[in-house]
Amino acid sequence: MQNDVYEIVARRGIFFRAFGIYNEVGGFYDFGPIGFRIRKNIEAAWRDVFVKKTGAYEVETSLIVSEPVLTASGHLSTFTDPITYCEVCGTPYRADKLVESYFEKNGMVEEASKVKKENIEELEKQLKSLPIKCEKCGNRKFSKIEKFNLVFKTQVGPTGKEPAYLRPETAQGIFVDFYSLYQAYSPKLPFLVAQAGKSFRNEISPRQQLIRQREFGQMELELFFDPEEDAASEIGVYNLQSLLNEQINFVKAGSEEAKKDSLASLLSSGQIPHAYMALLLFLEKKLIGILGIKDEEYRFRQLEPEELPHYSKGNIDLEVRTSYGFIEVAGNAYRSDYDLGQHAKLSGKDLRINVNGKKVLPHVVEASMGLDRLLIAALEHSWQKGEDRGWAWLKLPESIAPYRYAVFPLQKDEKLLAKAKEIYKHLLEQGVECYYSETGSIGKRYAKADEIGVPYCVTIDYTTLEDDTVTIRNRDTTQQVRKEAYAIQ
Ligand code: GAP
View 1 (cartoon, rainbow, N blue to C red):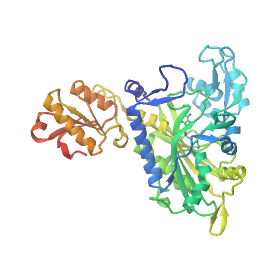
View 2: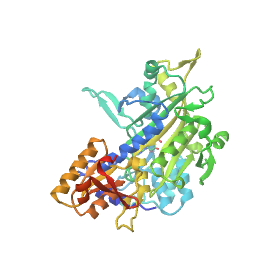
View 3: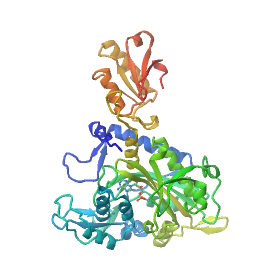
View 4: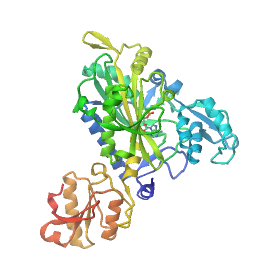
């Protein structure tokens, strides 16, 4: 698959390395005005599908969390990756990724896919036996593999004695607030709580642009339910029975190949661990469709038993094909009552709720989506080589395009400039997302609009001065039609 989209990304400042003028720390990215808009539009699409249409409560919780929260969740003890260092230059590597990328580079697809199941001893053996070299100095000796905790630590207050952490996921904020939400809203089970925001992980070797960062966007939905009750027939606008007919591309544990199957059949065979998880997969498929990712470009992957946390009753990842191979854009997990149980234990608060006279500690299924990985997927999948028009361009779906219109005076004639600015202001006043440009030839301006995915260009010409009509150029067909300027929406 192509990745020439990154030429546009770099040239148009869609995103770039943070603190780039110092060129120091990797794994942090800033978004320029175009990237910011596309990213926000992807988040808005998620909000529509996952929050508004499900009736979920959306919250915003603290980015910094106190120690007991992550002690309870297990992040401080178990949220680790295997680390090894080059024995000559000291460069740190994530050991599993080092081995995996060796296999990938050598076309050993099957071996590469098995790395995620391996424990430290197995990785150690491979690191010794394979001719893997340090990317920096070329040496072949690596240190003993250790576990490296990914949680960023900081201190709260002037004494510096109170440890705290940057949240490694948005989900824990939701679990910790569960009690307050329950008291304030007395919701009936099942109920859903969502959160979108930044999460932080001190990745050993951040790479592949936005795919493995140290600060990244997450969009998470937690669905709390009573495990002893049947799944509700409706969640918001979604009817569970009818959505089970949906066909998805599914790779079952132990297999490499995606097969089409219905959610209903995967649920009845136990490969989807709960009907509510089927709902989450349905929503994810819907969202990536909205982002322009075609049916053959995604797959759901059932995690292998070795990949599952001990409390999980089943995890399924959503992966999308990119120029970096299939990447995980979402993790779905049946987390049982683990998180609420742990927070109840450590806080001493009874987090069980009353359901028809009985006390229930709700179970949770979770859909955790990576906003920046979805941005990468949407950009790559929208990229068009554009040989016919002479420039590459982005066929972004209208709903996530950075602007709906670009407004251009045909040429630099005072009368045209004044009219174009008047129409531009009118559009802004209507709340239409648009930008104005009078710089360069009209052809160049079309090209610049196309390459950031603007669906329509509005051109003000001499006819406009006579009858207030403009030409509207369609990005996808390059066809132009004349329309009444003040009727554009
Ligand atoms: N609450 C569950 C959770 O955080 P996860 O699989 O660790 O699950 C969910 O993360 C999603 O967040 C991933 O599928 C991925 O899209 C995104 N993500 C995780 N680590 C990331 C990183 N270092 N950089 C960019 N995105 C990341």
